[in-house]
Length: 59
Length: 500
Image 1: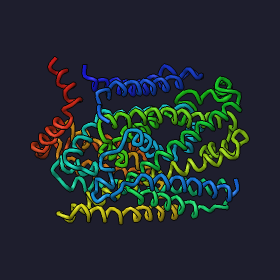
Image 2 (image 1 turned 60 degrees about the vertical axis):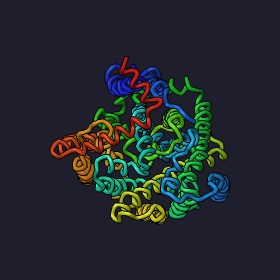
Image 3 (image 1 turned 30 degrees about the horizontal axis):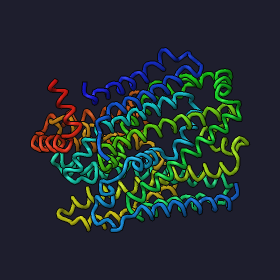
Image 4 (image 1 turned 135 degrees about the vertical axis):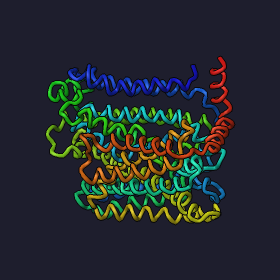
C-alpha cells in the first residue's frame, strides 16, 4: 500500500470524531469520555502524518 | 497591570523581535517576487513549522478557544481537533503545490489556479475574494489587541493606541525582509505563545489541586461540559457549521497555502507539517484547559470571552507571567496579521495588477507589492478603528467564504474536467452567497453558512465545469510537471506500488 493511502485513516478518524462523541459518549461525563477520545484522535493524526510523509526527503 | 510595566515589556519584546528580523535579512535584498514573498523557496523546516503555527493560531486560541470551552465545554476541543486533522491535507496537496511552484515559478495559490485552468481571471477573482474576507479578519485581530491592552491597563493604554501599535509592528516585521523577517519573528512569537500559555496552565491547574482534581470538580459541578452537545452550544448542526470550513483551512486560507511553495525541499515540508502538528496539539490542549480551569475557578461569568482575562488576573498567575502572556497574545495577533498582509499584497500585485497590465516586470510587481503592504495595513487599521458591525460579520464569514476556492483547488490536482468557468463561477458565486447569507441571519433551511459554503462551491464548480470545455492540455502539462519534479522519491514509491 502506498504511504499516501494512509490519509484515508485520517479521514476515517475525522468521521469518527463526529460519530462517536455525538452517540456513544453523550452520557460519559468524565475525562475518559469525549475529552480522551478527541485527544487520542489528535495523537493518531500525528502518527498517521509521520507515516504518510516518510518518503518526503531532502534538507 | 500598570501601563509602564506593559510599555517596558512591549519595548523589550520589540527590541528582541526587531533584532531577529534584522538578522534574518540576506546580503542582497530580494529583487524578485519569489525572493521577497517566498524566501526564494529556501525556507528551513523548523522556521517554517514555527511560523506556520504562529500564523495559523491567532489571538483566537488563548482568548476565543478558552472562552468557547468555558461556554460550550469539550466540544471546543472536538472543533479544534477536526480542524487540526484537516491540516493533514498538507501531506496530500503540499508536494503537488510545491512541485508546480518550483516548475512554473508560481508565487500565489491563485496564480497557480489561473495557470492550471488557463484563465487569468480565476487568479484575479480569487485575489479580490480573499481580500474581502481577510482584511476584515485582520482588522478583528487588531480589535482584539486594542481591547486587551485597554482592558488590562484600565484604559491607561487606550484602544486606539493599542491597534496603532500592533499595526506598526506588523508593518515593521513585514518590511525588514519580507517573508523572511515575518517567518523569523513568527518563530520567536510561536515559542513565546507556547511557553507562556503552558506555564499558565501548569500554575492554574496546580492551584486548583492538579489534573485529577480539576476533572473531578468538572464532573461534579459542570458535568455537561465534558460531553457534547453539553449545555447545548455544540448542537451537531452548529458543530458541523464550525468544523466544516475550518477543516479546509490549510487549503482555503492563502496565508497558509502560500507556505506550501516555500520549503527548501520535501523533507523541509515534512518537518514543517509534523512540527506544526506537535505544536498545534499541545497548544490546543493548553487552550482548552484554560477554559476548563476558568470554568471551575470562576463559574458564572456573564461573558465567556472574559474567561481568559479573568484567569490571567487571578491569584493563580503571578504578575510577571500575566504580562508575558499579554505580550504573547499580542504577538499571536501580530504574527497572523503580518502574514495576511504580505500574502494579500503578493496576490494584489501578482494576480491583479500583473494581469491587468500584462508584461510588467518582476521588479515592478515587487515594487507594487511593497506599496500595497502598508495600504492593506491601513485599511485593516481603519476598519478596526471604525468598529463597524459589518466588519465583525465579514470576519466571522471569513472561514465560510474562503472555502470558495477549495473545490477548484482539489479539482486542479484530481479532476481533468475542471474548467476556468467552473472555478470562476464557484469563487464568485460562493463569495456572494456567503455574504448574502450572513447579511440575512446566517441560516438557510436551518443550516449555517459554514455548511452551505462548501456545498455551493462544489455544485457550482462541478456543474459549470461539466457544461464547459476543459483545458485538457494544461491539465496534462501540470500533471507531467508534477511527475517530473516529484519523480524521486514520492513518485517512485507510488509507481512501484502500482507495478506491484
